[in-house]
Image 1 (cartoon, rainbow, N blue to C red):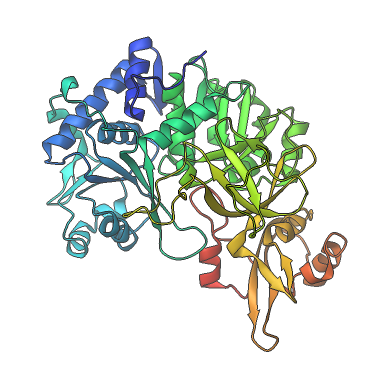
Image 2: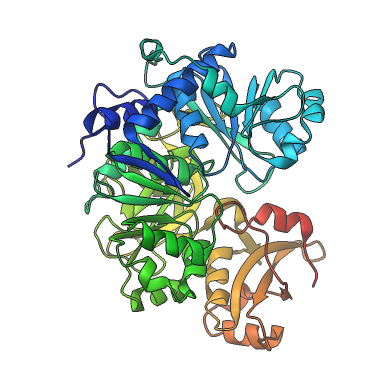
Length: 524
C-alpha cells in the first residue's frame, strides 16, 4: 500500500523523486509513442529546474504554463516547483488578450506556451505585459525574441543539490485562476501543504484510488485543478503510470485505454457522455477497476447506461480552491444518481442556511434535515485565499464557504442543488437552476440544458429561461417540453421560455459556461 506523502516529501516534485527512488525503471508516463520511466522523468525535472534557474528566475517568481497534456507539462510543472517557482497553469485555448490578464495579474516573469495563436502574437503580448521577460515555445523554433524549449532544456546542467525545499508547507506552489460564476478570473493560491494534503486525503479512500500497479488515464487538461492534482499528482503520489491524452477523442481514447490496459479513469461528464455511445465502450473499459467523474454533475441517464454496461461510475465534488476534491461516492461505496457522496477523510463539511455559525459544530456530519444549505468546509487541502493578498480565504477557524448549495439525504450522502449565486427568485420562491436542468436533461429528446434567471423589471421579479440542445432529428417543441417538465416541477420552477440552440458554451472540462451563456444570450 502506498504511504502518505511523508516527512521527506515537501512538494509534488518530491513525489516524482520518491517514485524514482522506489522503482526507477517503472513506467511513469506514456504519450503517443514516447515512454518515460520515473528515473527519466526525475532527471528531466532536474534539467527543467536548472534551465529555469538559468533564465534568472528566482524562488517565488511566477511561471505561466500554457501547455497541453504532453510530457512537457509535468516536466515544467515539477521543474518549476523544484526551482522554488510558483506555477501558473493556463488554458491552452486562451488567446493573447486572455493570457495577458493572467500574466499581468500574476506578475509572471516567464511564459512557456505551445499555443500557436499565442506564439504568433508574442510581440503584442510583450507590449501588453512589459513585465514579461521570457517567452519559451514548446517547439524546435519560434519567432524572434522567443526561446525554443527543447534547446533550453538540452543546454541545462542538472544540479540535484540545488533542489528547492520550501521554508514551510504554506509556501505558495500553484496559482490557479478560476472565474467562478462571473467576472474576470481570480488566482486561487494553493500551497504545497494544500496540494499534498488533498493527495493524502484521496489516498485514504477505500478502495484505494491508485497503487504502483495502476495505469491512470490523464485526459483531463493538466491546466485544470482536476487534471493537475488528482490526475497527475495522484500518479506521482502512487508511483503509478499515467497515459497522457492531449486532445480528447471518444473513440481514440477508448482505443488507448484498451491498448495500455488503463485501470483508473478520472474523467468529466462530457467525456462519459461521448463514451456512452461508442461501440468500443466495453473494450475500452475492460481493464478499468475505478471510473471516477467530477467537475460537474453526471446526467443520470448516462450513469444508468454505464451501469448497464457493467461499469460503476463514482462521482465526486470539489473546487479549485480545495485542491480540489472534497467528497466522493467512494466514501460509503454506494453511488446513487444525483449524489456526490460524503466528505473525504480529513475534510470537515457543514451545510449552513445563512444564520448559522460554521464553528458551532455539534457533530461531524452534514446537516441531515434535508433542507438545502451552503456548503462550508475545513481541511488542510484548502487554499490560502485569492492572489495577491489572500482575500476571501478561510476564516480564522479555517472554515470556507464554497458558494455551493446542497442537501444531505437520510444516508448522509450529499446532493448538490446549485451555486448560491445562481439562485433565481421567482415570486419570493427559490428556484435552483440545477434542479430544473436535471429534469429537462432527463427528457429523451434533450441532449443538454442550461437555465438562467431573467430580470423582469415590470414585475420586479425574475423569470426562468431555459437553453436547450435537442437531439438531432427530434421534433421537440417548447409546449411539449414544458408540459413534460410540469410532471416533475412546481409551476413557479417551470421555465417561462425555452430557447432551442445547436450547442451550449463549455469550459475546458466540459462544464457549461454560464458566464459565456450570459454574455451571448442566444435567442434561437
